[in-house]
Amino acid sequence: MRGSGWGRFVRVVGVVVVLSVAWLQLSLAPLSHEPTAGVGAQESLEPDPSLLQRVNPIAKFLSLNNGKNQNTTQASSLNNEQIEEIKEQIQLRSGNETILNEELFGPVQQETVVIVVQVHDRLEYLRHLIVSLAQARDIDTVLLIFSHDVFDDEINKLVTTIDFCKTHPREFPGEGPNDCTRNMNKEKAAYQGCIGDPDLYGHYREARFTQTKHHWWWKANKVFDDLWPLKNHTGLVLFLEEDHYVAEDFLHMLKLVYRTMPYACPKCHLITLGTYVKNLNYNADSRKVEITQWISSKHNMGFVFNHTVWKRLKACGTEFCNHDDYNWDWSLQYVSMACLKDKLFTMMLRGPRVFHIGDCGVHHKKKDCSSKIILNKVHRALHSAQRLLFPRQILVAHGTPKKVKKPKGNGGWGDQRDQALCRSFTFISGPSSPFATSQMQPLESSNSLSITVKKRV
Image 1: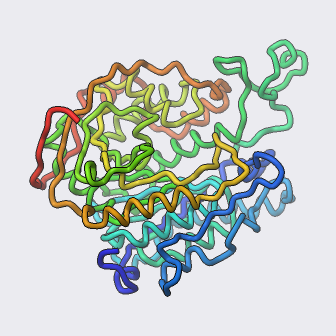
Image 2 (image 1 turned 90 degrees about the horizontal axis):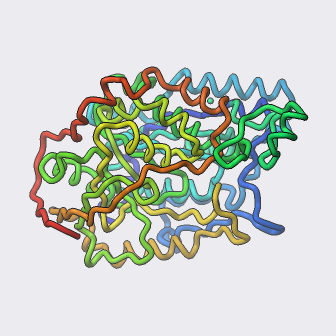
């Protein structure tokens, strides 16, 4: 690790705006901690191999409560008084908008890179993400925001221990006793008088799925439009999730691509630092950047945009919120295809600097949820590519054009209550908004760096 050590570690900025999102999930029926796939299934992540066999201050983020969360707060075990107390704590923390470590690293600037991490309940994955962030060069220059949708004592404690950068720490999405069950037919639903609206495929809502889209849209509105520390912010916002892992030069690559974007791709509006590749080949791809139309299933990991792009996305808030798809990324794909005048284009790193290490989550359940295999693969790839990190130049190429269809929707979002709550997060929405119909301007940058542009990847 370049420039590593306790000195640089302490320099890391600390903005953890702990935006705890309790979402009304606590006052209704509980959203459980990732249901297990079967008997004996549990989340047990292996320690980061790079921190073993040596004394390293960063290792403290892996040391506490190794294993599954023990102190997760679940609504089923709480009485009304306890639930109200938790709500008060959440409102107090969010209202104060406390920035940790600001006295060490100074106030947020207009061009500060903001990193927003969406957190659910997978504590051990989150530990590895924090370790990777702590080891990244220039991490002390960012504002790190954690947005939570589960109130968990261990996760809250972990976030507040971050001392390498600045840090800043809201319910309906739960399932009510009168809600229609997922596979109930319309006739039975009408007979029982249950609450809910079926989706495209005749299914009723499942809170454990809908909460992810609610959280993402609320979080984006909160960060861009409703955080006092960011009222004058005009820089980039990077979106990560709890089961991501970053390379030590991810900020270097972000800034390098950002500075070249006005020259290499004036039509691009997003930067994508991660990609889903089975075989990593940094000898060939460490400096390559591909220009392509943004596709949700390929470019939703470690993607970046600024306030200018956000205004246009927010202008299409009604389309985002009414689209019958519980996935926030596929809903953004729909916005790109159906609402925006200019479809979203991105500059994507062919040699990824953000990795997905979570085998178990909302969509996938396994008996063995250990991240050992994936983490070791990532560590080996980054170790072998050490001399190829921090390139001074990038090679920009246009990807092969592909016809992208407007997504139909994956369902799970037919309930009018979900759509109304989602719309309530947005101040300005609708395809008639001037933000949506005007020509989208590219990400702006006043700096330039040496690049090489090629025709095709």
